Image 1 (tube, rainbow, N blue to C red):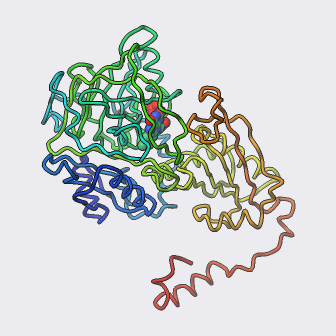
Image 2: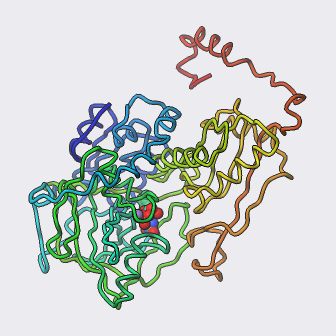
Image 3: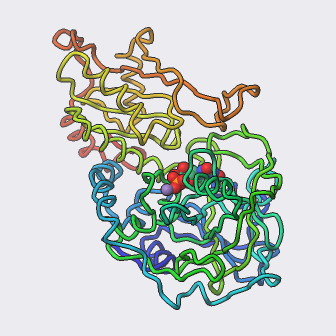
Length: 487
Ligand SMILES: Cc1cc2nc3c(=O)[nH]c(=O)nc-3n(C[C@H](O)[C@H](O)[C@H](O)COP(=O)(O)O)c2cc1C
Ligand SMILES: [Mn+2]
């Protein structure tokens, strides 16, 4: 069990766990992003880039792959860092409910000092161009300073403080983009301000700690403040300073933050930026942007970055996969579905587009119920695609096992189809003449289970029993184990 104070302390502990690598002299133009993508696919260590090419003297640094494997995930959430993937998902089950219930116990705490105040630039002095900001993909419309970003806004009606991760393009020394899509809390806030013809105050944290970044990027329910949720996970309130211009909370020990305003009558061309589906499916568009009034940063500040890419190459695919597996698992159990043995949303589907559900079938129709339910849980409804239901002898965390079940137990003519599901404009299958605001997509539910009515008579498997395989493995591990990854 480890606990940490701020990003610097988190880095120290990641280093002690041998889960941090420092790289020097890397080019911000595609090279940094390329390293991040390959490292994500390999569930490698966190990578801290310093002395970036052409920014050697600045002292500023960039951190990527911060939550890219199971050890880093557990460090970030303050869990036991020795847990396996399966244990981690099982250990998480039930906790999100408790955290949500406990949010009110942890209102943020306003303080007068904090590392974020080590450097402050206001108005004409604001200079965002001094930071090493990566160029992430060949066809991006510019450099993006906000990728592992936490965007803080308030609901003008209720005062609820929201934290969301919405990408931010760097335009010049004091303007950045803000890309909160339809349905996101930051977009609701913006619409409310704009309806009154008022500018929206905003804080953007370009160097949050990994936990704040994960929560910013997660669909925490409407009306629940991610700042309080953060407090509930850490069992202590988050310390913030009050922004000079906006009055919004700014995490006191963050690395880099700005505050400013988004105006109803001003837009700039935003994007494109490589998307998490692995495509550029939404074009550059005119969008509102932030005029920065103040820039706060620590000495030798660290920007938190994530490289969008395809599937498991996405920097955020791993943590999203673990987190959503636990959320869907919880929702299914809470709904009363019996005998759920495991849920896993693998990184290749970025924790959204592929869901494995393992059940111990107990009645006819059980598998049908499980598959349709998983697909339409609140946590998985957005941009889902495939659900595979497997029996309890199949390991849902092992795709070889799941695909074998599909090959031998699923009847393709029995795939369940759900039409008009909740989709996004970034779906590469969206026809260009259908606007994102009207687009929906479908779901396929694959029943890779022994048909219930044939459970008594279905052919037996010839696979060597688990206990025998284990015995053989252990006997021969010395000889062959270095070439084996399991049994
Ligand atoms: C690295 C990363 C980048 C993201 N970029 C965007 C984005 O540009 N626009 C967007 O609307 N959502 C984006 N998301 C998804 C949102 O952060 C996510 O839906 C989150 O729930 C939004 O917060 P909210 O629910 O408080 O609105 C991103 C998520 C991650 C992890
Ligand atoms: Mn929210």
